[in-house]
Image 1 (cartoon, rainbow, N blue to C red):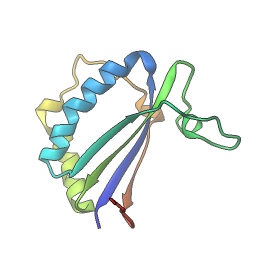
Image 2 (cartoon, one colour):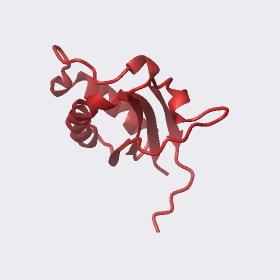
Image 3 (spheres, one colour):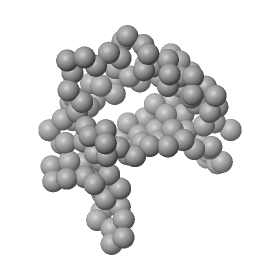
Length: 119
């Protein structure tokens, strides 16, 4: 089965357009280097939990929402190569560009897909 890299990212609501611009710039590169699918989801219904929730997971602050995103790859090996290539690609140069989110509070990880029901 495929391999999925998932992310939770706290993003100031005011930075939605800047975040989307960055994501739209990166997505084609991930696909070029082997990703099968890139999905970005803007938090719109994030209920407060008693023990944990999406906002707590990234220590979201007032005025921020959480972006839930994932990238699907054919394998972990393809993911490992793609990530190195994307971040070495000059098209991802960030000089002079302010990050539209707090990378320190981003949560991410890789997952082996164990079930996919596409209907």
